Amino acid sequence: MPLTAAKKIIAIPTTAGTGSEVTSVSVISRGNDKKTTHNPVFQPTACIVDPALTMTVPARTTLITGLDAFTHAIEAFWSVRHSALTDALATEALRVILSSLEPSFTEATEESRTAMAYGSLLAGLAFSNAKTAGCHACSYPLSMYHHLPHGEACAFTLDSFIRLNADDRLESLAKTLGFADTGALADEIYRLKVKGGLRVRFADCDGELDLNRLATESAEHMLMRNNPVQLSVDELKAMFAALK
View 1 (cartoon, rainbow, N blue to C red):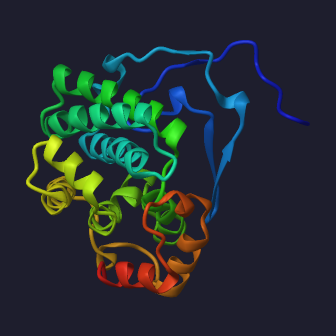
View 2 (view 1 turned 90 degrees about the horizontal axis):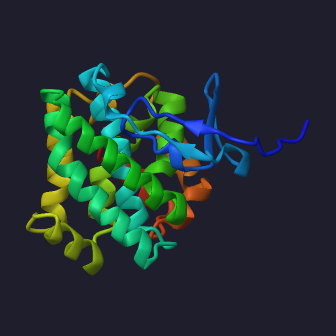
């Protein structure tokens, strides 16, 4: 049966991360298979963002979803499909998320979780127009073969892609966000992952490591086309090898 648009869809997010309340994207997993589908029927008519609904979300999940939102924003910024509008949304989302992510998972204050809900919303608006890129492309095989939750899978290569995609625009963004350069921004993401107990090496992950499979499937994923630096299978394999 073909999908038809519903008369009204009200979206109410319970985490500060996916941005699904303002997108037409749905992710479907079955066993080790994970696919993304886009359809206007998934686009909410309206959304109600109530940060109180995130107050009971555990610290680890808060960090994972928060890093997903960060990835949405920075990939919208460096996507080849970016625009002045998505740049503005992404920059503000990154500013808000960077200032509130750590306190949101270490203390769970109302102020920090309200800020994260706002940052996630902005990031959702940014990537729904500019689309995501390399980190998200790599997240699919990482989730399928190494069983990483989506946000943790995106974050697994996030600091690597910040270094790989470094250019004048990204350097300027890093400085706008209060960092000396892109390297310092990447270091901050790595620090947050370690502090929150997320996996940063394949040695910490489940599943048998197959670098060629990971690199090939990541390179072939449609979202990799949005990455500002077009990476070959060998270059992606080297990136993954550095994370062993």
